[in-house]
Image 1 (cartoon, rainbow, N blue to C red):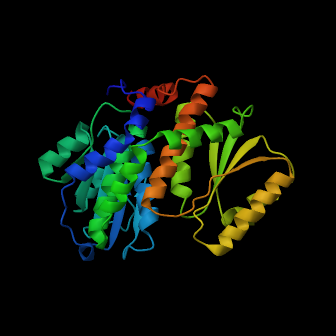
Image 2: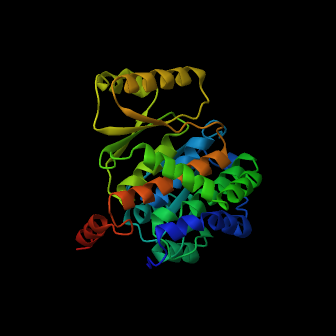
Length: 327
């Protein structure tokens, strides 16, 4: 897999990923009432789009959708389960294991991939496959997988997300204001770049918060974690009695009045105890705003890698692990 396309170049071209999907998507024509569950398989940069979409759709889907980032399908999976597999390379061993089990159980299978063994299986078994352009590192292809999954789920649930995706594409095609927002976040934590990052989320932003942490971890080699409200208020809040060696980012969707009050309290508590807290809460919760947030936070991870003098293209520990597992 080529890594010629840098993360900066990938982000500058992010809107073209959405455009590619809008122009190439072919309807699957599957009916949701033919299934009793949906399982999405994928890990890392290939799996986070599935997490974002399954969380976003949970209030409107008539059947459960679960992301599996492991080797085995849940016991409930059967021939009435729709299995959607995401692997940029097409060679992710955990995802290929899920494919093998899904085939054995007689599941309907869809795949999002650029090639590899997953593509070969799709061609051999006539599984529906959605393409992804090559040349990227997997974590920089979220525009492809997230847009495709949104259209897959829109079709299943009788919705139309094309206008939302077109709006997101338009916003991301004018990146300078969004890059400036990312620079503002980096400047806010000036001098604290080597501290760990804690992103406090609600149920609607947790998947995007996880994405942010993944990018900080891979690109900037920074420790990064999510904290979920209201769960945080039943345990983690008891550690907030003084300053922490952490940079706190509040990421609230604003969709629950009771949770909004909790965010206000947490912000005041952290500030009172001398912590740096940046409020990145959304003004609206919808698909264009989610893409906008993802884009800004991706740039934060790239800018932070520069501040920390890390090579954001290098993932040596991951490559060493893969080499070890291949023996």
